[in-house]
Image 1 (cartoon, one colour):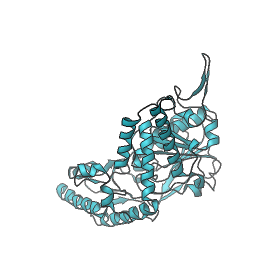
Image 2: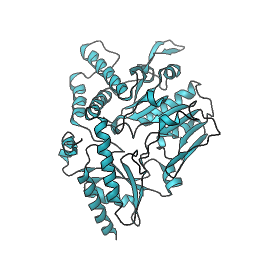
Image 3: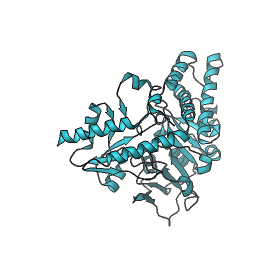
Image 4: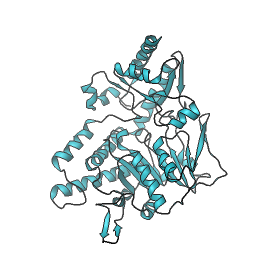
Length: 394
């Protein structure tokens, strides 16, 4: 089992800010020392561009960059040639949307299915490219209900809601009416909390960000089935992704490098590989029960607060993300009060305006999101300061 206090000792921020209660892990996670050390190693021991130099430190950079790709592939049960480095989940989704359309793999005006619980980055690229030709699976009574009479070219669903913690069973969806669509799964919220197996899920694409899984900011991942990546045109053009160039035209290289024009996030990608090792060293068999126990503890404590409204998909498959409002106090005021008392939560629409406006029918909520280094003391501190906040605004 996880000892959160021991884990906290591996994260320098908790030493540098004594008493910090960080409950905004759905936004970003803190970074362990081994990830920070790896970043420093890159810049101080073998700082070089990749796929360009033949001198020793360039060769070392190439090897470490390739090793990181292999580690990330291993984490999600993919082949390393199916892993593309990007700047984050948003960049990943834009790459897929633009490239599928430009390559003619999906038609102009393609029928796209997404859902009411999605993060903006999961459907705005499609909304833009298809002139708003989107269908939304409705979020009703904790379930997603989508039109079954219509055929879809592309389906874009998150694996876990960043507001309610709801998990979507992608594997099961692929067995039904949606099996013939190109299926894109957003793993940004799930990647650090549950095991992901792209072969078992049978998704065509998977996207996620490094900074939500104890890695650096500025690096993300596209997993794509090899046969699709081979058919797709590159999203960005420039150095590093070409094979031959003439004054009239060019041919691109093959493999994931085709989509990595320019200098990629080298140090960040290598450090992300170290974050994968960190997660695997703890093990999902330990992460899941720890976070589930903490989720239940937090739900029980929060539910005892007067005038609170909790927005959470409360079942054993839910993620450790709980959103709420308290009658008479604006969510921003709650978050500000907590922040002034060393407790970090998020307030707002969490980049899910459709979910907040059309489904929950609220302008904003307070979100508490937990990770491996949180414990019951963090929740107790949260509850104490929430009660103080209510008393302050009464």
